[in-house]
Amino acid sequence: MRILLSNDDGVHSPGLMALFEGLQGLGELAVVAPDRDHSGASNSLTLSRPLTVEKHPSGFWSVDGTPTDCVHLAVNGLFDKPFDRVVSGINTHANLGDDIIYSGTVAAATEGRHLGLPAIAVSLVNNGHFHYETAARVVRLLLEHKRYLALGPRSILNVNVPDLPWSELAGIQVTRLGHRDRAEGVVPVTCPRGKRRYWIGAAGGGGDAGPGTDFHAVQNGFVSVTPVHIDMTRHEAMTRLQDWVDDLEGFGEVSQ
Image 1 (cartoon, rainbow, N blue to C red):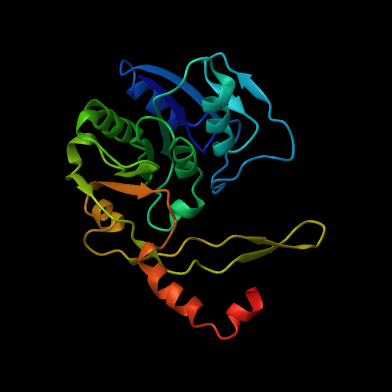
Image 2 (cartoon, rainbow, N blue to C red; image 1 turned 60 degrees about the vertical axis):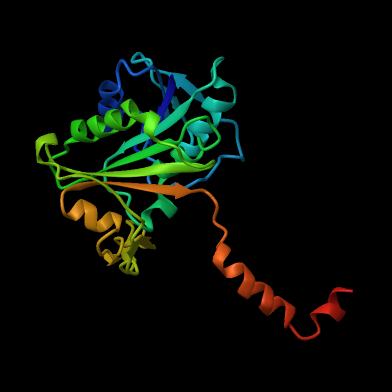
């Protein structure tokens, strides 16, 4: 099995190194990651300029672009042999609920959605102890038992691991995405030249964080494993939407 590792915290991230070390022996590993922190980059591709790729003494490759750029290059021509799976992480902080909309960690995994095996995005629910080795061990466990995992096409796993020693984990729970409250307000600052600038405010708390959600699982010491389908169609709304379109007055006359 050939596994591509990537992240959004950058090629020198300790979480990426912990993941690389923790997966030794499971297959042929290659690392392609951004040359700097690209947290919050979501699924953006760099289309306005060519990308520079550099190989480091560690054997890791860096790209002066986004996490999606990294995986896109790696699976579409940077290497001679194809990959079977993408694993993205270990992210320095949680990616729960609405976080996955913005997450570069999840974006790197979703860029690998066309490969033969489901991609995995893994994040540490950081409380300051940085137990990356626990998160790496969780990923290894999932990969070692891959024969039990059958997901549909264009699916990934979003994994969040409490920042605890392995022995203190409560277990693993399959969860749904929760939802955050509205984010905190932007933080205005003044630059040395007197111009107004703004920091993006902190993410909101878990507004939908009850039992069954990823928020609830990690708060209670469980690893959260959430299947994510890269099909954003709201299928259950299509009939109602079609009825609404059919009832639009004059639409038929205008469209003819």
